[in-house]
Amino acid sequence: MKRSRMITVAVVLCAVALVANNADAQSCPRGKLRLYTSWPMQGAMLPEGTGMKNGVDLAVSEVGGVVAGYCLEIVNLDDASPQTGKWDGAVEAENANKAVGDPLAIVYIGTYNSGAAKVSIPITNRAHMAQVTPANTYPGLTKKRGAAPGEPEIYRPGGFVNYFRPIPADDIQGAVGAKWAKRMGAKKVYVLNDQELYGKGIADVFEATAKKIGLPVVANEGIDWKQPDQKPVLTKVRASGADLVYLGGVIETGAQVIIRQMKEAGLTAPRTRFLGPDGLLEEELLKGATCDAALATDMRVTFAGLPFEKMRGIGAKTYETYKTKFGKEPTSYALYAAEGGRVIVDAIKRAAPAIEKAKDVTEKREAVRKAIASTKNFEGINGKWSFDENGDVDYDTMSGFKAVKADTPVGCKFQFETILE
Image (cartoon, rainbow, N blue to C red; front, side, top):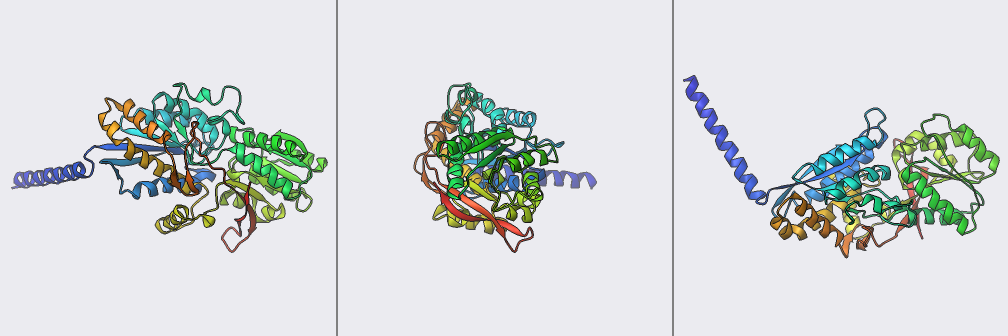
């Protein structure tokens, strides 16, 4: 009797497995394709990392997870070190190698930090795998303007472009930041940077533009963001008589301490104000810096793109859909992750015949890479745009935000102030 029941159970399980396999075959007649994501998913970056993850999920869910007969599977990786909670080059390299080593992987989505992108782009390039970022803005990853010697060619060992970003780069953002500073009445600026690729890069662009438009720059100084006390550098700021501090950095590299200690050092508005780039447009920054300090320094931040509430058409619809689906406001780059996901879905759809004919995984990836590179007149969240020959978008919309009091758990928020040119 016992043996009979076991046989019956085995038959039922086999039947269930066959049904599941048949259902899989019906929904995915061409099999699976995997999209790998990589950015920090711990520490101060957890909210933004989760927001970008949600954005990719949103794009894939819009097509029911199936494109041209291929089922899309998302593999989310964390490129932060468990020891520091911050992006780590060795971890990022491991993530990229894991993706290119997976025969079902078709696209790599990431990174958040431009320094991490330096590590992974050559790896994905050698594998002919397209890499799409929701957040990297350092110019040298794609273009000569604002780049270091040898960039961007050093990231393209295969001699072709495989890296794409649906957001404007820092050669635009740093420049409009300097122009905004002058328009706000700044007379003398002390520039600080976190000595990392993104922070130093945008600080350099800000400095160059400021000097070009007649806005004096006292210094462009790198900070040791690992130090809990930044008063020595702020003492120099105070002695310089600068009426604006511009900090190139992200929330993991000391910005909270700088802003908090500016207030403690008496570097507050109208005597001294604070301005930073989009890497600081995070609620976590306001938490760490405290609202009192952010408000006291009359804190402002630039951002590459329109504020969500000012978006129209596709952008407005995406904003509302995100809030409905996830029950919260999108983080700064969440909708750009959705945009990147949609670009990938569209490319896979157009590349499907070539993918089907491909002899191996490299040819499949190359078909998708070429399709992404040829993206033109895409209906995006900031309007219609196309990728240029460098993998950059051809629009340059920028926004300016200000820290203001708000009835929120934090007590303040970033509020849209102006469109920047």
